[in-house]
Every structure is written in C-alpha cells, then in structure tokens.
Image 1: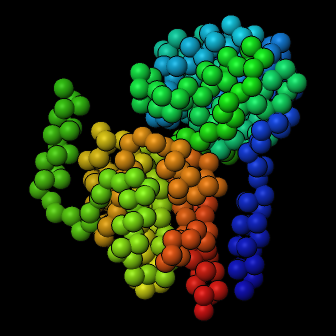
Image 2: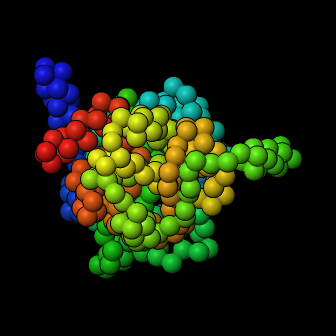
Image 3: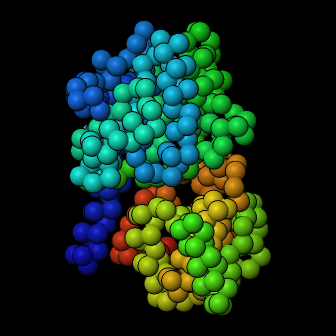
Length: 196
Length: 164
C-alpha cells in the first residue's frame, strides 16, 4: 500500500512540470545565461531585436531537426529582414556530455553552415521554463515579449519543396510588417528533449 | 556501398523469416476504423513510437511485457510507428527482435498535425506517446515521454479497478 502511495506521489510530481506556453504568454527566462558556439555568453534579452525574438529548441541528432534544418538559414535571413532576433537552443542536458556537447554543437553548426546563434541551455532551464518538450519546436515573441506563434516550422519536415503551409515564415513576415498572424499554434512530430 | 550491403542484409533476414505480427500503413482514421472492427478488449493501449527514438526503444520491452501480463479481454496493445517509408524494413526487424505478435501499424506519411490531434488533442507531438482508450475508443488516460513498467501497470490497473 505504501509503495502504491509513493508511486502515485511520484506520478503527481512528474505531472507537475511546467505547461507548454500558451499564446500571449510572457517570455520566460529572458535573463538566463546561455553559452553560444562562439564561446560568448548571451541571453534571450540580449538576442531580441526591435520586433521580437524567435526561439527554436533544437539539437544535433534528432531526425526531424536534420530534415528541417535546411530551412534554418532561410528562417535566420527572414528574421533579420524583419528585425527579429533568432536563436537555436540545445536543451538536451542528458546529452551535453556526449552527442550534444559544446564541441559537437560547434561542429554541427559548421557542418550545416548555421549563420545564427546556437546556444547550450545548461540543465535545460530554459526548456523547463517554456514547458518545451521536443525538438524542433519554435516560439515566436513580439516586441512586448508576448508569444505570438508556437509549434511547427512548416507542414513538411521531409521536403522543403513540398511545403504547403509555411507557418513560421508567414508568422515572421506578418510580425515584421505589423499584420495579424493568421495561424498562431500548430503541432508537429518531434524528438523528446532529454532532460537530466 | 556499405549502405546497400546493409539494406540487402536486412531484406535477406526479413525474407528468410516469418512474422507473428502484421504492420499496416494507416492514417489515424484508418487506424481507429481497424481497431473498432477487430477489437474484443475492454481497453486498447496505443503506443506511438519510432525506431530512431531512443526513449521509445528503451520503454518498448515494458510494453511488450504487458501483453503477457493482462488477459486479452482486458487489454490489447497496439504499436503505432511514425517511421518514414524508408525505415519500414527496420520497423519490421525491430518488432521481430522484440517478439511482438498481432496487428500493428505504421503511420502513413504526411498530415502530421491532423494525425496528432486524432490520436489526442492533448498530445504535443513528442515521442513516445501512449494513450489508453476504452472499447468505444474514448481516450481514458495518456502520457508523453518514456515511463517505466510500474507506471504503465498503475495506469492500466487504475482503469480496470474503476471498471470493476
């Protein structure tokens, strides 16, 4: 009986983790220190620009990230054009000593010609604050630090050519030009973030 | 070249062996239609997984064990792979290694958002995902991410006790 209660207690504790951010939620963890692949420390507060900031939870090995990342530099360029900061965050704390180490992140970014900050989220603090569960998962905040789009990059991980709905690109353009974002929340399959 | 040799080896292994399971490629609608047609259990546990998903692979044997621990009139276990078409042979090979039996499925490529919402409106899309449905296919319990065998049993037992 005691074991049953302990198990139930453990389940309740496990389920008490932060919920995924809702639309209009305030940017959490803006001041958390994040180490970039250039060796410098940064934070979301430092990375955001006049029209907001885009955060992508990502990693080095997830097959969904691998398929989608041919669009990362296009997203980076569109963010820049719309005066929106852009950062990819690696929160796989359990793998920070192995396949998602800083050295591996630097190599992965070089190999794929990332032209944007790719930061390590130590102990997955930022992912926990966001309630983020998977990679890739995007969160777009406006100039007032309010969440205006969250979810998928687009509707086709396997092929950029076959994309029909460019959710994130459309949201970036709308946010940059002060228009309403048509689709604010989407879902996609992805890899779990490996918390400690 | 090595890649092709590996593919030939996998094909050879598979073609030389018979399965105690079947894997159909389905949309979410087809999945539920098939289950509704063939089900004779009080509850159906659907585990959504993938061969490249480490937590999925780690928890897989716990779920296979459940089939042996519960009467088939109480529980049916259904594995639903989200592997892409190019991994379909690996899916079969993995199921065979895990001594899986019965009818299982692989998600038809595309239309991911509708698929996720049809499985559960509350599912974010992260793998693995497990849902327990009653025989009318109402979702009675679900969870995201890897859990241990005790957790699975606790959830199933809780439903069976409630049912009496």
